[in-house]
Amino acid sequence: MLCAVTAPSRRVHPAWWVAVVTFLALVGAAAFRAVPGVLIEPLQAEFGWSTSTISAAVGLNMALYGLTAPFAAALMERFGIRRVVVGALLVVAVGSGLTVFMTAPWQLVLCWGLLVGLGTGSMAMSLVATVTGRWFVARRGLVSGVLTAGGAAGQLVFLPVVASISAAHGWRPAALGTTVAALAVVPLVAFFLRDRPSDVGAVPLGGTAADEPPRSTGNAARTALAGLALAARTRVFWLLAAGFAICGATTNGLVQPHFIPAAHDHGMPVTTAASLLALVGLFDIAGTIASGWLTDRVDPRLLLLAYYSLRGLSLFLLPPLFGSDLQASMIAFIVFYGLDWVATVPPTLALCRQHFGPRAPVVFGWVFASHQLGSAAAAYSAGVVRDVTGSYDGAWYGAALLCLVAAGLSIAIRRGRSSAAVPPEREAAAEDAVVRG
Image (tube, rainbow, N blue to C red; front, top):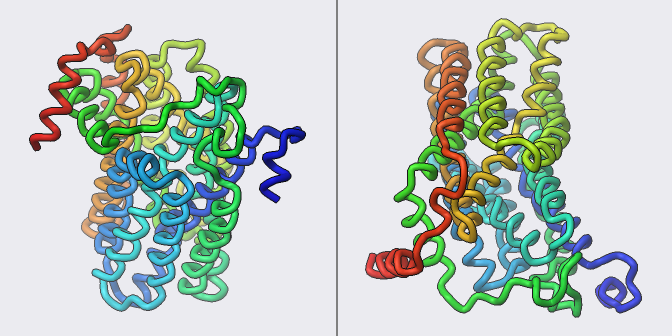
């Protein structure tokens, strides 16, 4: 079968097969990330754990999901994309499968937090950047947008399925279902995902053999840390990182795990709330692709100003929309939030390119890490707010205010390439500093 795919007479470029398999791997990993928001209440009912206790595991998962990303590329350079992705999927499957045996909170933190966080983090932005950078010259932006949106949407599209299984058969079959989803992708990755076009006698789509990035002979982890050391000396990095941390806090950290419990507090069935989040995932794809198109034509700072401001306004308006009956106003919120869910990614990446030049991928990896740290903080703090006040309202209003802060941070970024031209001696000095520890 592989020979048929890579034969000289092929009509479909092998890059498209790699993109399809990568998409499926991201969706398979995203399956388990859909679980926590649906299973908070079943776990509370069976074990008596507080929302903040469960949120601590969710928070660790999100933090590791981001912090693993800058180093996942180093593993891919050392061991290859296929081996790393297969290993990551197996870790996700083990983490989700072991949850059916847990009886104590620390086991929840180990499975949901540590194992799944490390596994999914190894297939985050680093996988998208590596695949598109090696296999595509033409349509690189489109493929990056689709893969990014697919990974984010996959977390939400699985929600109705997980909720239905949980309601009909309990939370354990729902958790095992996500294990099966991750394992089902492993054979596809093992047989069809290749590291480089040259491995199958091809060249990147729309390019030549010279467009394939050279094999790294250095220490990729050291390069990642050196990139952080250089970026951290600039004002623009901290503005981007702070804004993207708020982006994570108001999406993956707050809405994804806590929207369903908040809706259920107001009498809405869990399956209905899960279906609403699935709609967010569907509109997310359209919003991300449209944002990429706009980023090529509009100042990215203005786009971020608009995205964060409108997101903050929508969160201010959200609390009164909850109710036992589904109203058109809630549907309108869901559609807007879906369009805005990861629309911030293309302009944020564009600003990284403008200000950090060739180091943009590494710098964006660290900016993405801040996104997940913000997600982790919000996931935990929202649970604390619910436990202390008996309502999520304070979390929604607090997140709305943070969005306005992010809008201000974004427009404060200066135009131009303020930090792209770092002298080689400074870059070498940064790497030396990393080596010395």
